[in-house]
Length: 351
Image 1 (tube, rainbow, N blue to C red):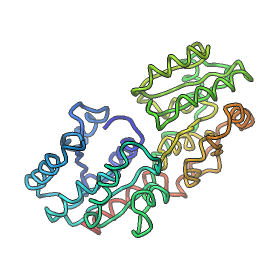
Image 2 (cartoon, rainbow, N blue to C red):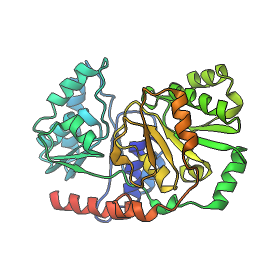
Image 3 (cartoon, helix red, strand yellow):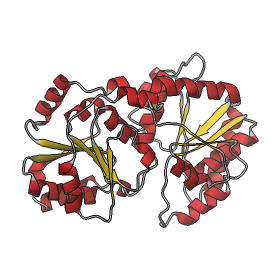
């Protein structure tokens, strides 16, 4: 439970949920503690640790799942967020007689890669085990479940009031980062291939050539961070790219940006893009991201086949002022206050 988009979305719901009616416990697949573990435990949740899901170790994993549900017969709902691997968990939940078994899709990745055979195997194991199908977007639902299932869209909601624009906070964060008077481009995401940081740096190079007062702020950690730091140096951008690592104050940081960038290779419906809109920012994103993500009319889609120079032109032509989008987000069901009550009602109805 680190500070990724999916984990943040779950915490948004968990913080708001009426825990006298519904309590979340978490099954994770890593031994190390996550950024949110302390908070989960303060809120009364339990964290159970399973081994990583790896080819060649499926039999052992299935056995541990079966044993878990034998030892924990109290659960009425299992809501699985591990995409195609959800079938494995929900198979065990079905054997244990759990009435509400939700498979939840968070990606819309149709690319071929070395994991494809295992994804196909996992999808084959999906059939018949869930009895409810959720997704963060229509594309994400089609990617995992095809057209044969009735898919419920659960919005990646955020606590809108936390992100409302505040000029004094903007001044504070810009002073803290040392970017006063500069054009601040921001990105928040793990340093993984999916997020396309290498192309992001090429885009920023093109922007910086046109506007030397521009600066790029990168928030997050991951296996490719060191590679991206080397690339920034190679491009002569070391003094103009700020690597902030993992931050707890995302709502504050977004106040200090002038524009948000997300040139991802694929996404479901990214929580961070909802957060950027909640902060009233204009966002320029790749056209691989579903149009459903544009909740406020302040998202501009650009093709990944377009050159960094073309991206730069679109970025520099975009508005860079913040507006109040809270009413739009609430009306669209992206405020956690509304969305959480819907989820509680759903659990109670189907448990």
